[in-house]
Image 1: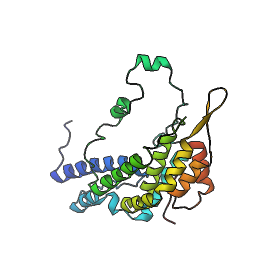
Image 2: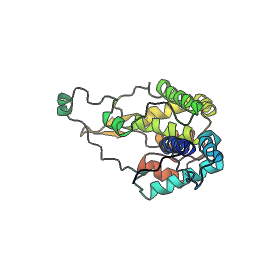
Image 3: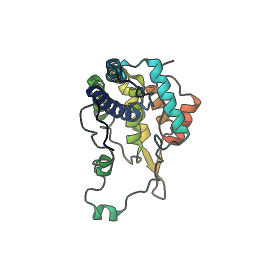
Image 4: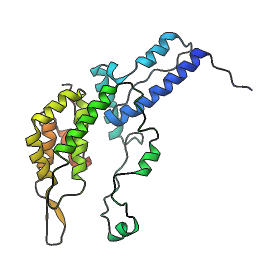
Length: 248
């Protein structure tokens, strides 16, 4: 049986729906949110198409965003495969790794890129201010935190600090305002980041964290100086990230 040909309006709805699905995937990655997306109506109207076009992050209420982030947390805590990816145990590189692969340790990750086609294409959400402002947060981290040099640096802490900053900025939502806050706290954050990354070597040549309180304090400053609640503290300790919430 021949496939029924779509009308121009049905085709337009399908096109806009595919764009929406891509935006939603981006929201899950960037904002840790699971949105409720519109379902296909029995009769495609002009208004139904406009509703899809209007379904963008900047048009969503803060209350709705909070609900979506809560749903993400629930799915994460339930270890849903769609949002939870267990971290493999850390295996320190050996000399053989370096000899066999001259690019070992480079930032480029071809496997990740293959699994995320279209990651570098224009944002379908049309919310260019978010992308630009988010880049400014990244740039702030690069020049303020990533430029820190410490002796006996702990593996993975620098990346964890970056993740915490971006998690907090995404949760706050207003990137420009949050950037101003980061700049006002740059001295404190730099000092805490230095302590968090710094380690000491024991007699067995193992590196240990010198100040275990530095990372929670760093997260507290990112939380606008408000102490982390029990759930946030436990998640930071056991999973390495914080679900920031600035809607209270």
